[in-house]
Image 1 (cartoon, rainbow, N blue to C red):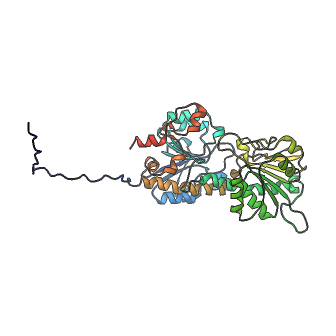
Image 2 (tube, rainbow, N blue to C red):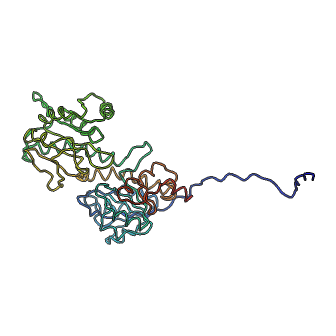
Image 3 (cartoon, rainbow, N blue to C red):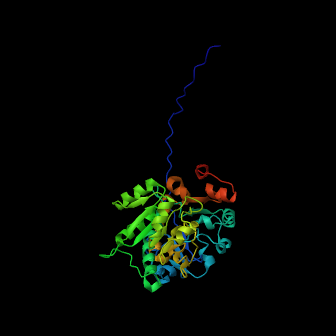
Length: 404
């Protein structure tokens, strides 16, 4: 049978389809709630009145709970003048589609959570309980954590700024407790002509270590830095722009340096889990009476065997005649500066979320933001949390791709 020729009819017009692009939707209006923190020792607030003013000027609604800014010395008047609505009923605040908190979700908050709410807050893995996660899963929450939030340079901006504050504060705290007014030894941290400089030992060359070193050197102290990561020690010296005394964590060298120092700072941390204990009780017992240990890693268990968690009200305990400062949330003691730091990261982020057309769109277009999301519409997207509580893990990339 002869092959039939294809019939081409002139009544058809063959045209290529135009390419469809992923068009960004128009800006979404955000409704943001800022509750007053009731968590232990939390004085910070995640958005300052100035930041609220910018959000309101961009047509977003912000509600603030009465006295939420009190710990940072921001009044209700500051917020209402910036355009926020002050609310006295806590349940009202929790009706906001976006909650912005400076402390993790606590048990008292759980019954107030709404369906499909977006929560921006720290997560504090060490204190996290499975009930928090399960309740948020039930409510189909989308949750973004401060600790894992990445910016375009691949760093963690909020963690970095909190570490900068903690590192800078360390020397101020040490100076305070070495003075005679606080029953200290009566030593001035600094280089006075004709007097050997005060000796400071810093364990950990991360951001906290770097800023503590920077401030100690600026005061004129003699600084010795320990870390097992040689790359970090090199980076520290490059960032400081000068050579300083560094060493890997060699117990004999460390014990020798601790024996003669006035201030010892613990700033070692692990990515997850407990901080490594590198200073034993014997080493602490051999230290000079009246010297001070400031363990910044105390929220992860601390690097000194003798460290204990203390509070801003009673920050010091004395063991072996050595003062131990173990306040877990140092930036909260400098709440106004810390609030401004957090606010500087979150305010532009919220504006960007709105420009992108909401959180879902933002997550799709912004890869760095995905790192910070540990729950998306009730699905746990953080592998570490899913392992810790034996919950189902869902890959966020697959989750959002399937929704397109």
